[in-house]
Image (cartoon, rainbow, N blue to C red; front, side, top):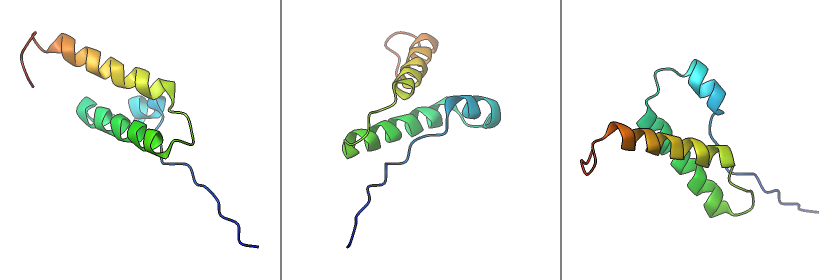
Length: 74
């Protein structure tokens, strides 16, 4: 019998590891990594998107909006 198995899409390095061990990674890279993982999960549609990814992504966006004067583009 030929069985097919579904492999979940790749996620992202857990936040606590990223914050503690991958110090050199910039927020812009992390934001991109999170966005890509969220998109992969959304495109796959078989596993829920992790809420902590969305929360962390939104935190990065919020920090950027505070650091950037209103109306100024990066």
